[in-house]
Image (cartoon, rainbow, N blue to C red; front, side, top):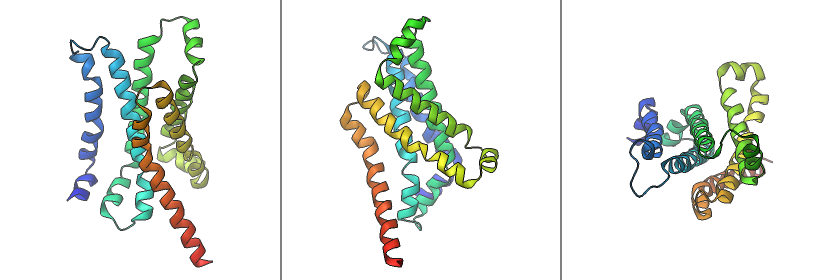
Length: 203
């Protein structure tokens, strides 16, 4: 039942768009208790981007650990779509942040870039941009499978930078960073252990 639902692109689209509506809602219906709806929106957009990034990073290890699980197979059908959604939310987060802090002066830009969490966030965003552009079939054919795969391993660097960005900026509590990215680390470690075990068994 769940696998059948997740195979439908329309269902996945709803799951991807709904958090965006929640994140942008303060801009359209500001709460009297919220003195800065734009800041609330940019924080929520960053949180959604981080959660989706962690989510898409679980797809491959889930399929590797449970190759016959229909849910894992269904999720992996949408890796590209979810990956593009990560970049889309990151882009909205960057735009909202720019509108919130940037006053058009070069000094303000330099001041922002001097903050380590801002710089790491921009590097992570740049990586996500490259991965999104090269996710097209034409890019895969042009780069070749091996080079494309090596390039897209940069997603793990983007994830590490995102973890630091979120924790250092205190956009979310560090414990929440653990809850978001902890399952990814556990699944990746389990996949590594499974591969190592299989190699040892066949040696």
